[in-house]
Image 1 (cartoon, rainbow, N blue to C red):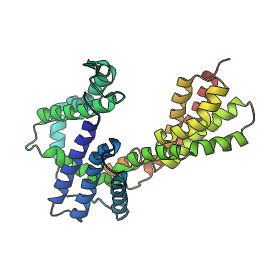
Image 2 (cartoon, one colour):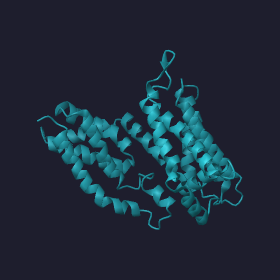
Image 3 (spheres, rainbow, N blue to C red):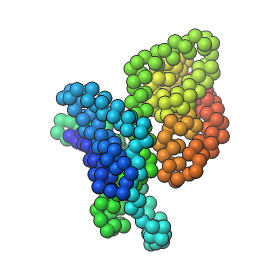
Image 4 (cartoon, one colour):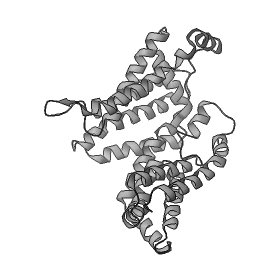
Length: 324
């Protein structure tokens, strides 16, 4: 059986290579501390498997996470030396390959779909070929490797180190924000385990008018957006608001269709994603990669879309999710 841990180890290997690239970059500022950040992140991916299997104490992983937070607090990791193609070389490649430049990028979703829709059901012996519930993640890892091979065959760079140097360059632009999505997703699970969903349910029970469907829909959708703004990720907000309002009120009390309620609820959460710097991978990272002068420019541009879109989600859920 192919296990999802193999994908995490592959990610760890990539971060470890980035750490080596940064460590050997003698012109990079604070290269030792920056390399330590990426090496520590690689360690968390590998050691996490031991914690999950009960083969290692969890406090070691906790110390590693605290170490990452401390290094990020000192503004690490920093950018390394820019070793990439020139504008003229990029224009030449664009002229030569045209739309074919997008082939490696299109390989990723194509391979991931094959794994998620087909290989997820293939059996190996008495069990499944892919670890149950992890077909999409495994497919994403395989797709990334296949896309890398396709890109290397198409563009034929002068060295096999080029993908790692480019990875180091991109991670240097992104910095500590690269690990924020993982932290926020974990935060959502911690909130749920700590009983935040039950606390929110107690508050909403006290303020919602009894028997008011539209009030419950508004609280659920707006709550998803607000929690996403705070936590930076709709997937982190989802368990909290669904345990508090979505399941007990909208599904159990008002008999809403779960698929419609939860799908539209996630869309309402994404409206909050458009409005918050906490959603670093959507708002701050693109601004850093594009080297925009106004870091919050994407958020300012997205807010006028997010607010009416949230209102539309409320209307769609109220009209289509409940029996008449």
